[in-house]
Image (cartoon, rainbow, N blue to C red):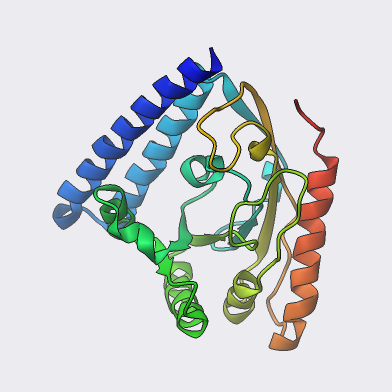
Length: 241
């Protein structure tokens, strides 16, 4: 049954990508960036409904009151594809920092470009940091937040990846708060897995971490504070089978 549900989800998920991406790209010349980003949020909401109805996979969120007025930097645990395809429906408008290679995927990549996501080449670190700083500040000027996965890649449940400082550096440079986010989506939708187990994903949003008025020398301490916040919340999330 889980396989059949996951297969049906896959078919409708791909159909959703084709539909929304085609719509976003086709309307690119006649719509504003904000309008195209709202379409991306609709796509994320569509994915949430598919997961809930077909896979019986929903989420419970604790800490919504901790979300400050935009803009801010979201630093989120990365365990699954779930957070990349649903979070646009759960937070105020944000852009995602992602691999530049994703832009070359037909339809999906074109829509990413049309909605102004921040694409970087991780192998070229200095250039990636420059692009992140430049485009991130442009987003903040528009009142749009930025989502970064500080561990860089998906990590299995129960493990801690290396926390990179790019998101903290961006927040420091712009003087915007950092919002730490933890979840256990990898328990139900594992990385590189086709199957989606039914259940309830638990997501926790920690208190925002202020950066305004702090200098570059605070980066290491802030990164440690972010990691401690996220990993403490991960420990507080009840294990799910």
